[in-house]
Image 1 (cartoon, helix red, strand yellow):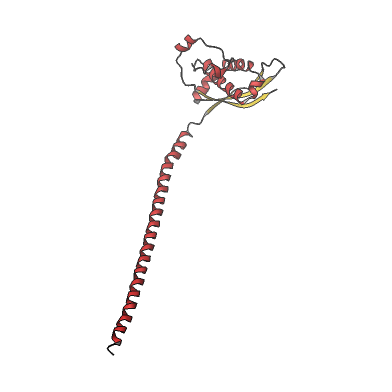
Image 2: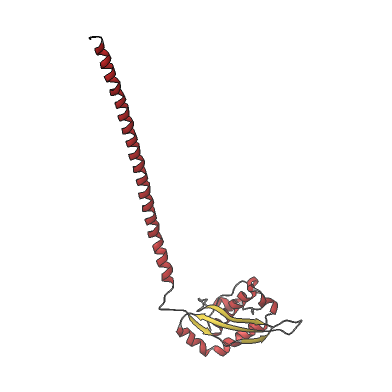
Amino acid sequence: MSAAAPTADADAAVPAKKSKKKLIIIVAAALLVVLIGGGAAMFLMKKKAHDTDGAEEDAPVAEHAAAKRDPKHPPTFVPLDPFVVNLSDKESDRYAQIGITLEVEDPKFAEEMKTYMPAIRNGILMILAHKSSRELLERSGKEKLAGQVQREAARTMGIAIEEPNDADEGEDTPKKNPKAKKKATVVDNPIHRVHFSNFIIQ
């Protein structure tokens, strides 16, 4: 009887060791799950905070873009009667029919322009008469014409506008006296843009 007692004690110790190992494995697994869950939660919280910051940063840009366009002060347009003019082509008779609308600073300036309209139209006709169909058929030629019309209309009203480089303008623009240019005070052009409503060359 006394010999069997140690065997019973050894059998009782083996399950105790196994249960401790199981407990350690379960605790380690639970700890691992908690760490993974916590890491995922931290990651999601950081991502959400970053998205919120991004939205806050974008908001002022959207407000700024909306602030540029003021519905209380829409652009003012001055449509001119269509121009029909013979072009400077030497090999054949060609003419252009061009509709021009000027976008100006404000309604007050638009009203002021009306008193100068005969002189403005004359200046634009003189520019058009020196153009060839080849020039006007190109996009760059149309853009160049728009710049010349914009400056000529302002100059006719006594507004000094800075000349672009001669290379950009070519020979169509009359040369100004450099001394006279230095005396004039250059100001921003109240004629903001030139829009073509129609552009036909025949």
